[in-house]
Picture (cartoon, rainbow, N blue to C red):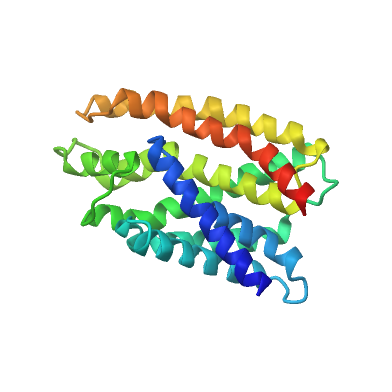
Length: 260
């Protein structure tokens, strides 16, 4: 029963995180936060099950998240991308085999989060691409709007629309989104203790700088091809939403661990 409540709570985390991201018009989705937590924490939560606990828990929470978001959250388009959340759960579950210990050096934790976030982001972007190219869905998310505009515009000589969509989404969405989710999952698993606060603060600064660089790159390159980006959405609201989530995460998780 406790496990069912935990799964329900995790799904709610992703549900409200997605609503938060959509409200602030951030370029992230934040719908895989619970998937990362479940996959990365499962091996230590269920040690008797073995290494398979991570992939199974991640895939299960990923599937449930998209089902709940799609059927109850008014985001029917997310049902088409359930396989992406499932894949992320499996990848994070496998990555949990190399989870740093609580006493690991800051450089080890930082490197782990960066590498895992990059790889999961790369694979999630590739998994989402076929559905993006079909484009038979409607969504009010900024990234969806950008991708649909890229696909509708006139072809650019020597460029592939599929590659353009993948590159754009990876830079401004999949990598920073999975970097944040990996950070949250690691924080939950090894704890947001004082010794790790510098690591999380370093990631906040890195994500802040990266986000502006990535958004700037997309604006400069895509404006040349006629992409219509709303400045308020892309430059102001998006970073505010991202930074609010990053800044609040360490404090929130320290409180939750103290409550436990």
